[in-house]
Image (cartoon, rainbow, N blue to C red; front, side, top):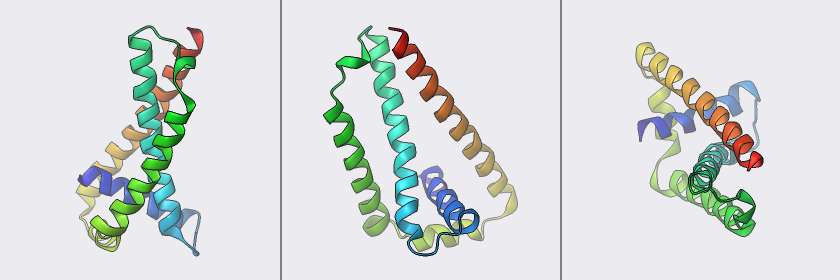
Length: 128
């Protein structure tokens, strides 16, 4: 779970340091983390449809919308009630630089693989 907590931390860091979101950085962090989960879920669904030679057009849109809503609700519940978000932020803020560097590298790889695989699967699905 350390990587998922690091994902939360990096999205929070992005919202507070780069975008300088002051009103509700927690909400935007939840939306950002949920977006990554949704992209991963959608990529897996497209991959399954491609594996079984089905057209992605047969995938019900209400399932996708429902899964998106559930993902946002789950992330909100998890980071609000199950996992202390301030503890996550404090933990990574004071982590040594070697571990942060390794987590940053894995985070960048995760982002690149997520985005590239998603677009690649979408292009493959459109060709069917």
